[in-house]
Image 1 (tube, rainbow, N blue to C red):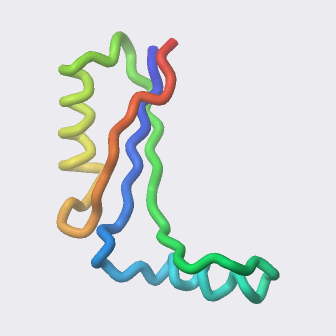
Image 2: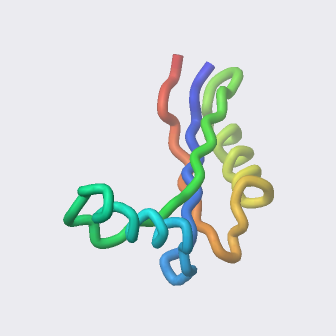
Amino acid sequence: MARVVVDVMLKPEILDPQGQAVQRALPRLGFEGISDVRQGKRFELEVEGPVDEAALARIHEMAETFLANTVIEDFVVKVEDEK
């Protein structure tokens, strides 16, 4: 069994109002020196069996068609932990 992580983020050219709200709040809370904040999503998938090329291709397809809106979001698939 392995854990595969899919991180989904808005593309750089897409406005991120949630990230901007966090960025504006940080100085009021005493956190200085942060020039930009982007908010995203993280999916942790427990995969049965080996994470080979076929499994990664299937997860990539899943991310592209279901987990991310590829018009406005980018995603990265990475194997985090193989057991």
